[in-house]
Length: 362
Image 1 (cartoon, rainbow, N blue to C red):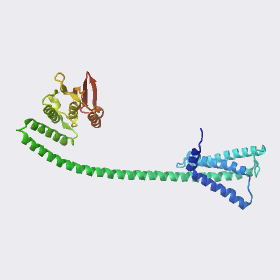
Image 2: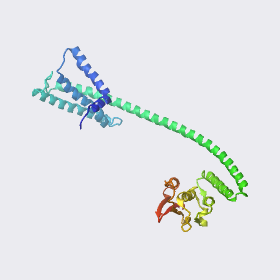
Image 3: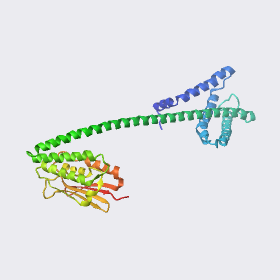
Image 4: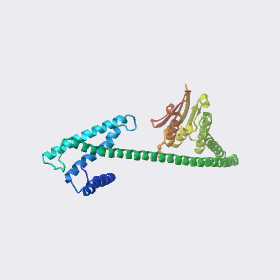
């Protein structure tokens, strides 16, 4: 893998605190203490030992301390054991490497390496020195990580408070809108009733259209707040919808609606059948007497079946995106889950919609 200059710069920026810390520490130990003692070792000596010391520092902090399970009772025996192993392994490796390099003339050391008790004791002090630094670094990391977790939890708590406030504000707006919606339809229905009374004798078709529209709007407004509504009420509004479209087209629409008496006693979420009927009027060709559209409802062994069939309107200006049917699917999924299914298909230039809802007690 090729390392670019930008990768190196990003690495230095990410770990700049480490580089600054080690630079200060090494400067103190090498330069300050060297000036005090008036003695300096060759550069290779410093590079060799600080390389291994830094490795020991990070290895102890990132591997040994977590493996010791510091927050458990096992740390009482794990940590001393692992530290003893670190001391033995570190001294063995560094002492053998320095002896090899010195003997073969690859590097000259200020104090020639030798295998003796003084060497072991001196190096043990240095190993423990960096192990303690690594332990302190481990706890500092833990402190900052816990602090970060606390800050994240506090942010989450504040976010929940803000979200609750937003929901409460939306609720207040919805309540105001609901009150306003109760006032506006009341005025609208009174106006439609006045127009119906005024036109009943002079324009009976227009009056019937106004009456059908008024009943459909009243049903839509009143029943949408209910989780379930009797099907008889919605079927009556579907008949009003058919009547309205027939008046609009001068009775030239051909559509049949069939349902059994048992269906009228069922209760489902409102405006499902209305939406399916509106989909036929919006996208279907209902002008062919030989191929009328149909809306059928059946109820068998707890299963409500609703089927619509109509010719596809090939002359409509805008293609259908089935937004109404998609909304029906979402409402069915939210209310009935897997107990309801809506399927669509095309057969011989006809568009079919099949809705099934399992209403049997569970």
